[in-house]
Image (cartoon, rainbow, N blue to C red; front, side):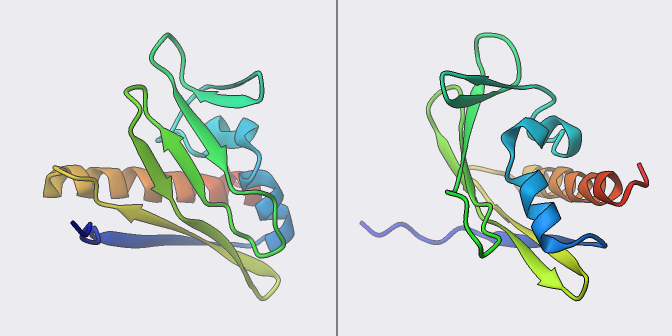
Length: 136
């Protein structure tokens, strides 16, 4: 049985820093707590796996292999084993760049939950801009 596409929202932020610098920062899982607090406020590398959060029920995150195209896609594996694929790009834009992250509506997610998740991601992208531009 075919799987129907889910609703997607492409959220973005323009950052006044070179794309290569932004890519280096966002592709390093150790930086997640500095900008993606909606994802995790703590991250730890244990035996080559990046664990998000604290306690026994931690999620893991795995990023796409390093590349020259600005692809920072990642998979978040939730504590119960569900995998959430997160498409993300750093796209050159003049002397700066655009960071674009796709939020996909998960099965059984209400409109309010989808709006809340989208708002958290947009807040994270805004925080990323402030951190990398040195304004916050």
